[in-house]
Amino acid sequence: MTDRRDHRNGHSCFFTNFTPFRSRQSGASTAEYLVAMIVVVAMLFLPIPGENASVMEMMVQGFKDSHHHYVWGMSYPL
Image (tube, rainbow, N blue to C red; front, side, top):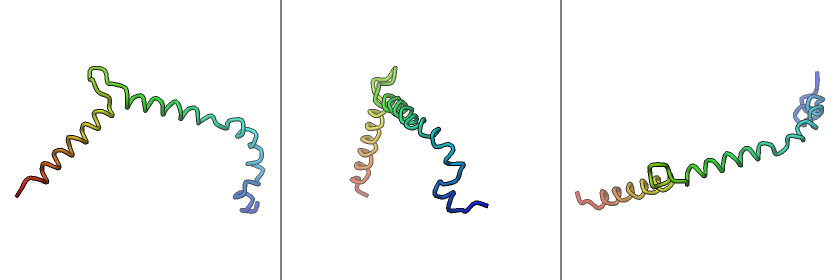
Protein backbone atom coordinates (compact mmCIF):
# COMPACT_ATOMS: atom_id res chain seq x y z
CA MET A 1 0.00 0.00 0.00
CA THR A 2 1.18 3.50 -0.66
CA ASP A 3 1.07 6.21 1.91
CA ARG A 4 -1.87 8.59 1.49
CA ARG A 5 0.40 11.60 1.94
CA ASP A 6 2.25 10.68 -1.23
CA HIS A 7 -0.90 11.01 -3.34
CA ARG A 8 -1.95 14.31 -1.80
CA ASN A 9 1.44 15.90 -2.40
CA GLY A 10 1.70 14.61 -5.96
CA HIS A 11 4.66 12.32 -5.20
CA SER A 12 3.06 9.19 -6.56
CA CYS A 13 4.69 7.63 -9.61
CA PHE A 14 1.37 8.07 -11.50
CA PHE A 15 1.56 11.85 -11.27
CA THR A 16 5.28 12.18 -11.89
CA ASN A 17 5.19 10.16 -15.13
CA PHE A 18 2.72 12.54 -16.80
CA THR A 19 4.27 15.86 -15.76
CA PRO A 20 5.97 16.52 -19.16
CA PHE A 21 2.68 15.82 -20.97
CA ARG A 22 0.83 18.34 -18.81
CA SER A 23 3.43 21.07 -19.32
CA ARG A 24 3.20 20.82 -23.14
CA GLN A 25 -0.51 21.60 -23.03
CA SER A 26 -0.15 24.61 -20.78
CA GLY A 27 -2.26 27.55 -21.97
CA ALA A 28 -4.24 25.68 -24.63
CA SER A 29 -7.58 26.39 -22.99
CA THR A 30 -6.81 30.11 -22.63
CA ALA A 31 -7.03 30.61 -26.39
CA GLU A 32 -10.30 28.67 -26.55
CA TYR A 33 -11.85 30.73 -23.76
CA LEU A 34 -10.68 33.95 -25.43
CA VAL A 35 -12.34 33.00 -28.72
CA ALA A 36 -15.55 32.00 -26.93
CA MET A 37 -15.65 35.27 -24.99
CA ILE A 38 -15.11 37.33 -28.16
CA VAL A 39 -18.04 35.52 -29.82
CA VAL A 40 -20.32 36.04 -26.79
CA VAL A 41 -19.48 39.76 -26.51
CA ALA A 42 -20.00 40.22 -30.25
CA MET A 43 -23.41 38.55 -29.99
CA LEU A 44 -24.40 40.92 -27.19
CA PHE A 45 -23.33 44.17 -28.83
CA LEU A 46 -23.84 43.66 -32.59
CA PRO A 47 -27.26 44.59 -33.95
CA ILE A 48 -29.73 41.81 -34.64
CA PRO A 49 -30.66 41.47 -38.34
CA GLY A 50 -34.17 42.83 -38.87
CA GLU A 51 -33.99 44.82 -35.64
CA ASN A 52 -32.14 48.08 -35.20
CA ALA A 53 -30.92 47.23 -31.71
CA SER A 54 -28.49 44.86 -30.10
CA VAL A 55 -29.33 42.46 -27.29
CA MET A 56 -27.75 44.84 -24.75
CA GLU A 57 -29.78 47.80 -26.02
CA MET A 58 -32.97 45.75 -25.82
CA MET A 59 -32.11 44.60 -22.30
CA VAL A 60 -31.31 48.14 -21.11
CA GLN A 61 -34.58 49.39 -22.64
CA GLY A 62 -36.45 46.61 -20.81
CA PHE A 63 -34.89 47.67 -17.49
CA LYS A 64 -35.82 51.31 -18.19
CA ASP A 65 -39.42 50.38 -19.00
CA SER A 66 -39.67 48.18 -15.92
CA HIS A 67 -38.30 50.94 -13.70
CA HIS A 68 -40.67 53.49 -15.25
CA HIS A 69 -43.69 51.24 -14.54
CA TYR A 70 -42.46 50.55 -11.00
CA VAL A 71 -42.05 54.26 -10.22
CA TRP A 72 -45.47 55.02 -11.67
CA GLY A 73 -47.06 52.24 -9.60
CA MET A 74 -45.36 53.37 -6.39
CA SER A 75 -46.46 56.99 -6.92
CA TYR A 76 -50.09 56.08 -7.52
CA PRO A 77 -52.11 57.02 -4.41
CA LEU A 78 -54.28 54.35 -2.89
